[in-house]
Length: 396
Image (cartoon, rainbow, N blue to C red; front, side, top):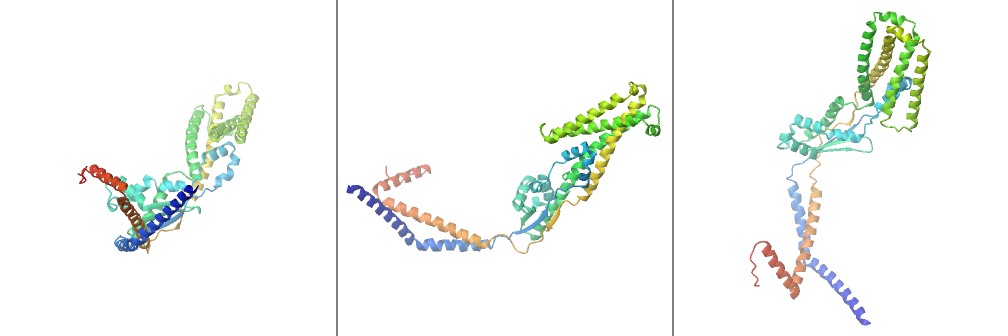
């Protein structure tokens, strides 16, 4: 019964002895473990004085915000075209999007060419210059809604100019893209207006070919024909709205079902209006059919023209989409190198490496005193010598 107790006691003694051995190893090499890290820290501190200083310039700006333009209040009055414009302008600008723009190849190439960064960074080609520029620039977006651009360079003036140039190049890019709600609406209605204009011109030419003047037709009291044309234009606009809603709504969505109900109601009104006409009225006079087509295209053209002009007004209001909060200025103090941090890190790293070294060295010495461990070390040296292609001095 006493044997297990003695075994536990022996294990505890070995643990205590090993801890004492470690402590003894540390004490024996105390000077090395203290003075060598301090010397390394002082050396690193001295070397840091020869590192060229780096300056950081930062600019902050507020990206464009989505706002309701003056045309949004009139969308309800346009019925189908109002819903269509809302569907066409569903893109929202986020800060992450503008961060991606600032990191795009187009802006990087413009900055590289503008500041001749290929020669400044010593790059062999444009790709290496982009990598070097990315290493000197940090772009971030915080919870405050602001986007910051920080540039590191040995020249403080160049760092400030390069940071501000990011914002100016971003403005140029936004001028080439349609990003805001007003720009999206303007682009959409510009295309629709051009198409409607071509169709209206063709309808007008076909109408004039009948030999009846346009002024006489406008004075004609054929209100039924004009009403049918407007109904057909409303149906066309509603069909465009339904087609656009299929891209982001399911058929069971309330808005989609309401749009389908409105389309069915418009078609029903058109059928009733056509049935109310006298049989053969459209075919008895050729100009009536052409006049109806003309009024149909004229109604679409007027709707698209009104929305296009409103979109242009909103776009002119949103011209200054980027508002700079802080303009980058030449920094007065360097940001790197941080001499104190370099010295502390060098001291800690050297101390850890030396501590590991003295422990390994003491373990090797202890192993050399044991016959079995000494034989293993000898075989290890021989294997290491063979791996390096050297001859071993130990006899086989």
